[in-house]
Length: 164
Image 1 (cartoon, rainbow, N blue to C red):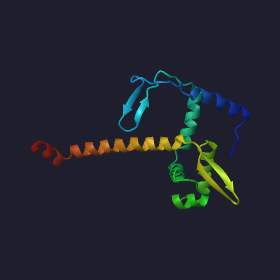
Image 2: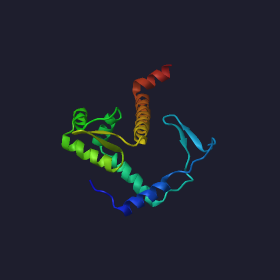
Image 3: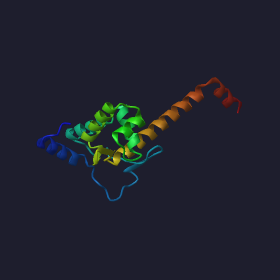
């Protein structure tokens, strides 16, 4: 695993500070929208992120961009696991599990704790689980809408609407 240089760590730290959105003591109804699939959503369109923040965000999303890594995270959402347990739960090889865990560790998404001759992995960033749920809920709502549109386009559904 590559260890970032002190200059790279400093660059990321500065960019991460810029990523932090300003906190408001009380949000007004104009500042918050309600989404049926995600709940309250802050309207931060007036806040502009610098290019350095986009680099950090892209790195995080790249770490999440592999289905195998998402499968590993799905198992880790249930609690700490060893590499062998992750192998069994995901049907990935030990080499692949270890490679994906290294990417997730580099991104700060998972952490490793040594226990004797074995290591336990767990999710290090609690926002990851919330992000996964948010995306899954959004996908479910989208698919539900598509299924509704398909049902409405079927000839037997149109007949039922005219007869009713």
